[in-house]
View (cartoon, rainbow, N blue to C red):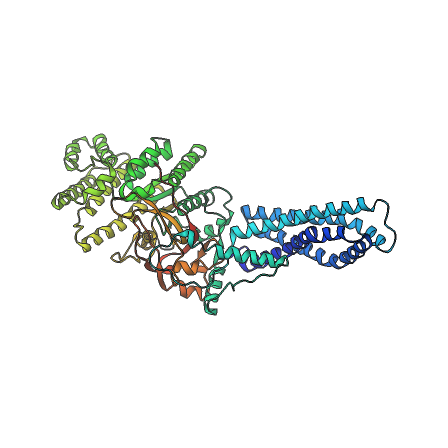
Length: 622
């Protein structure tokens, strides 16, 4: 992937900006705090002689530092985007202010001070020297402001890799005691203080072997930093993501945890970019088909209350979606549709629950267009539609007598066969939707007809679910023509399955059918908190984990000097390309925690990775 600005150039520019602005801030601050009071304490002739000599010595150095500070902050303003560009621009403005105060405030007084050092001071010399001191305090303030702005800029974008660490024990470590960002911030402060002339001792940034350094450097060359994971604000930093997507109609975006605020808001942000820049119109979630229809009615027409729909349908294994972040996404989509002619749509591609809406949609279609067949469909669907809440149905249906579940699956498939045999109607679109609803019902009941006490049958049932999830996405895309973002777990959207017992997953089926027109993006993290269930009866609760263990994919990715970044694996040079093709332990946290790590070869499973260093827990709706 072509990059607008090489990261090595940004790093060099940032370093020069810190050093030069740190030198200015340190020199002026030292002068204001120590030298100026010393001037007041010595005889006037000593002060004037020393002041003159100090100005002659400092002139070339300080002028050069000002020039370098201005040019490097100007370069950062050009290289960076969004809020980071604003920080760099403000730092540059403070540097210019420092120069202007020096040039038009302090410098005009210098000849008078030099003349007084070899002659007789003017009668108003005390007033003139006081004015020089005022200008010195002003430029000290502007220089310090520029320096602080640069520190904030660096703190928001760059983390230096931490020294090699001892692998953590298996139990999760509280994040409060393992805040890895303390090390990078300390390193940055040491760098800055060195620029200001303060001597410090620091550990080396890299304690690993040269081969590890080369790997991290290669990964860095393929990475593009992200300015934010929040949906609002400038989206210009997502242009590399846009180049990755290209003309693909379907983009799968995974997540290493189902309960992370940052992953949910990042997907919202990616959707906004894809809508604005790539013409995407559908957001597909790993949620039931019937729930998707209910939420889509709100997104399109304002029908219903999304909070109530989420409360009713996001239950059991879907409870993880009942969060503020997803409500915000749905409300944004609705607001977009109020203001734009091109409408966005929300889709559920999963089959773990089939709401009564699907049964009603099929029978209503038959009643309107094939009334003589209505009794047959009423008989086939008798007793199949849920009569209890979504969570209770999901948790209890699989435990019912298997012969009854098998009979339900047979009758649901018979309904599909009957629909396919009916004469076509004048509106083929309506017929196609009715048939799709019937197929989803049949697929769900077929999946739940398995003997879940048999591990092999359970794996086959959920493997079938993966195929149907892909089929639903493909049906929607071909029926609507929409470009789609498909959201799910990393394991679902992967091109190649890493789950034991699942030779193929949703992403595998999509890749087989779409080829390069399917783009898969995995999301990883190093440490932080998320929502998860700790047992079958518990509601999702906040769980915290420390940094990823050494040797894992996340541990290595977290050495790349960006807080959050996109890694286009297709553009990765050696030795990164070889490392990405090798399997390493990787977090895969779904509805429950703890779950064992999976051995994942990143480039075999995904076209790209978005790594977020620190995540926080999603906000559940009451």
